[in-house]
Length: 601
Ligand SMILES: [Zn+2]
Ligand SMILES: [Zn+2]
Image (cartoon, rainbow, N blue to C red; front, side, top):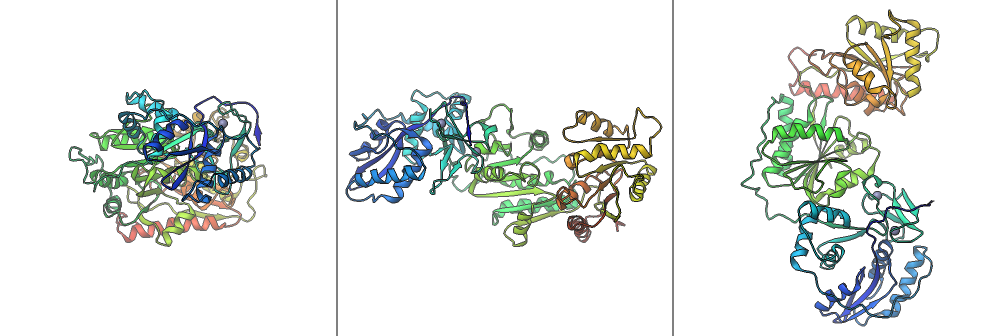
């Protein structure tokens, strides 16, 4: 697919592929400034230097460099003829038109960069993967000024093996393009590029929100330096000041999370918590264990609101630490801190930095749909680091790895108030009618009456946006209510024009029944609530995990811990059965471990 038009010009890397030879062996290199590379290699005793290509966009040059490095004999005499033939084969592999021969003249060696400036760049790039412009911003944020062009300093560090140089979009060894920032290969667009001037530049659509990853744009990465047997910083007080009482279930999970980090035997661990059981408090154990050993910790989550909320909570637990929150629009992207909180998107800028990554809401949109965000978080972790996943509804792949004992698991099966999780009641009505039918289904009416008699609120979840208004109209048609201007049942969905207003009014208990879609499955807590899932057998919408999240809305508050959950459908889908079984298993586990109040069945 080709998109016309141009993109904002940013630094564009165009350069040569070259062969350098000395002492009967050689190597292939790429450079935007071959004079600089000659200086570097002359210092290391290499005398022969030949350009193999004209200037090319970085992605193309990097592919050819790799291609030659694998195929050329790099011992003995310089294989110039062979190199030229291989360059041509590589060009054909990428489907690129023929180009002019490289210039015959040799680049003049320039001055070597100043050591202090190189050190400054290294320090600012540590643990990061950044565009050249972002490195300039990071330097500016730390008031570091350099006189040498930044790309020259970075090239020198790349030659010295201190920095990795990657094209925004590069090629796999088989010639397939792939985004080097977010790792995906399917959403790459061919564009006419104002930066490199080529008509077939590649841009990644997958991570466009974080700035353009293009074939001609260089990404620079440097791992965080390895710490000498970390004993922590003696000056840093890392003890958490827990200003809340942990429940027995939380205490056990807290200790297990702590020992996961202290022992460091497993690389990955799942904290599998019941909805509303307070998993964030538990992670303080893991965070404290890591910080006390001087380790770097990242708490990542797909949603920005969660990060902001978390910042407040963790600041009260560790008022003595510098906590940095990163999300779209947050200030100071390149600051240093003792503890970093970031959206999974922002994690795209870290490289081999963290010893412990806590990944919250692993199953929530957009993380569940987006392998790029997993990739980002995995790359932000050091190779020997650890990951702690937090969720009430882990994706199937993660559960399978827990079952195979590849991932450690910590269960947190009980809520604060010590009452069991409401177990969904399955109401099977083989002739369940659709909105508009003459009569409301008997089972639906029963749920309504029970709810209204107890003076609690009810959320009815439906599997499609268009059903929201239909079900509202259906209910009002049979039961108009006393005041038509203040209907007792209202509907809302993600794109509803009055969504926030309706939710706020429902929270203020101004009407008892809300009809909605799965958009409301998370993040809403109503103290006295029953939940009904209508047409719960629509498996494309109501997966087992969605049903568990929905059921998790009920019974959260001590004011009404026994909230009821109904799954109403014409048949029992496997997802409905799985959801109910999983909730029952959590209750059984909580009971066995003695987490439930005495007298709870
Ligand atoms: Zn990308
Ligand atoms: Zn370009």
